[in-house]
Amino acid sequence: MSNSKITPEDRPALTKPEQLFPLVRQFSYRLTKLLILLPLTPNHVTAMSLLSGLAAAWFFAQGTYQDALIGGALFVLCYVFDNCDGEIARLKNLSSEFGAKFDDVVDWLVDSVFFTALGYGTWIATDNVIWFWCGVAATAGATIDYIVDLFYYAKKSAAEDEESREEQAVVQKKPENLTDWLILIFHKFSRADFCMIVFVLVVFDILWLLLPAAAIGAQAYWVTDLFNRARGWRI
Image (cartoon, rainbow, N blue to C red):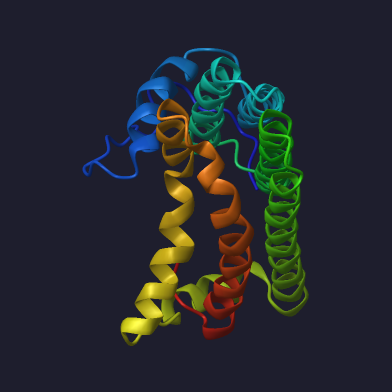
């Protein structure tokens, strides 16, 4: 952990994305170039991500198309800020264990509130409570995945010091077959541009399709997380 400040001359360069995906990285790269000029810490940016995510959830809960459009834009902004905080932490040499934990809590809270709010808003719009329960199921899946992360983090912290973690990172194995790769891809890349998926569904007014998919997919997500960690894949 380091909190030492560095001068602009010594600051590491911000790396321009070489690939189109994830799309959110294209936005965060440009926004970070502006945020880095302001007296902001990574935790400030994480808090901005949280506020954007909670505001998006409030608009989704209203159950109207116009509110959903605003919510979709705020949700994208939330994910962009979520990328920016890590970039700023590296550029300003302000990485910390608290910041990493704060970022994880915000990720879980935003996803959980989003699904519940979306379920509630769709319930209001359709007068069918099943949509609300789909949102609750998706929230439960996101919460289980967060608990899985906490469990493995605590287990690792109790068994390893920083030096042994660095040594383990070198020997972590990669997926060995097609099934392994499919699980890894689903787990890692389904989240990166999730906000973009949400926004496209909002534009076409079919965001409700996300609820039954998320109610099932969120459970698959935490199950694949268990596979990832149990097999020690490099992720």
